[in-house]
Length: 521
Image (cartoon, rainbow, N blue to C red; front, side, top):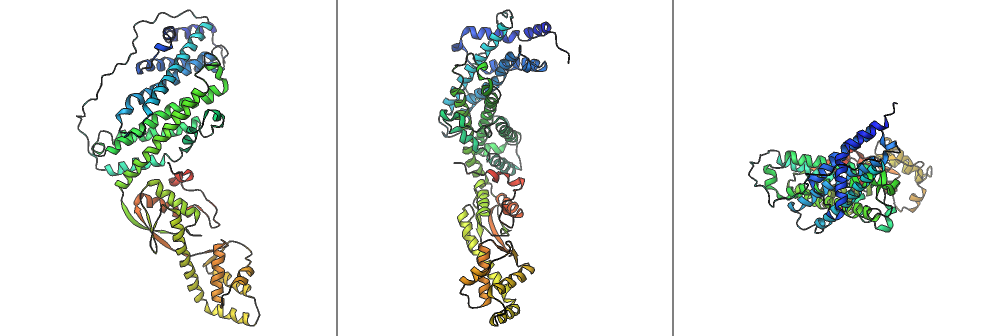
């Protein structure tokens, strides 16, 4: 590969960085106490640093001893200008959303976050100025004629634009609320990070709290905001439902916080953790260490999770408001009924949407409570026992023949029971899961006077021990919001997440939120 002429490259960089360097010299000369972030200033810093970073990367500066420091400090300006812009956006707009006092310290904490990023950028400008001096570049021309102040008049423009009407308003709101709920289930790691205290920084799980995980959340909430702005903003839907405006505020705040968190995580993973001393003006710089991680965890992660959790109630309220209630017959879990895993998954679906759902059997059961589904399962087990009893009655000739063999001591009760189980399995009434079946302990403990009653006891015991399945085709009725019932139907079509031995199997993509379901407090 051809090596670029060092003098020509030096001249090119000196020319391309002249405007940024003139600002560095000006702001550093004025002092940190006069350096305040505004959106016009951040736009300038972002544009200049972006073109410099791209140029340096095009020539491989990251792997060059002479230029890697300048490249790194320019990248700091680019990334933290982006972070500062998002934080200023929050500072200027958060009061316009009706959060009803749920986040009383948000504005104050955002001002503190802006102050930190301001100091971080000032430190970066100083570093770039020092890099230029180390390269032997002459001082840039004096900065003249640039005004980055941002004096904003109070108030808002009148809402005099005619709003459009959408016939599919209900569908759009439902889609938005459902999408929000489904995109928040894997955000628990943000709450865990927010609880971490300075002595435990090393205990932060950066496998979860990573650039990839934060960026993934960020992209999903960018999609949600785009969905809202495309189909709901400035329409009659938003004008008629004040909760939609609050939901838009939650989505926007989360999106901007995640964008800033992406910057912080990126620099922690790529630079601070590896070469932190070279980022800052000196190794004991106050911008390093606890301040950086405190802002990441106790501001960015904390408020991201708080706004996610706060909007869940809004979404669930909307889904209840627009609920389409119906009843639907759904097959029971095919193997062991509504035991722990199926019951927990069903209740998780119901609590996820926040709409009431009833399971109707001998009476109504609240499907959001696993314990209620366990109680329903007792009734189902009773139906299974009745089913087995009826089938045994149809086998009266076989039972009579075995009873005669018992009376003549030609067989034992355990062997007679085993023969009946074999015949019922061949008739697809039972499925044996454990071989061989040891029936002696069950038979000896039974006081049943007849072989038929003994068989009912043996089968009930084996089923409770999960050594056999009773192949009983039964459906129950669920009543509730059609969206919730649809997810329960999908769960049923996929074996309620288990195979015939009771082992877990993967859930379908539509129910991926259940794989990490945790109720948000």
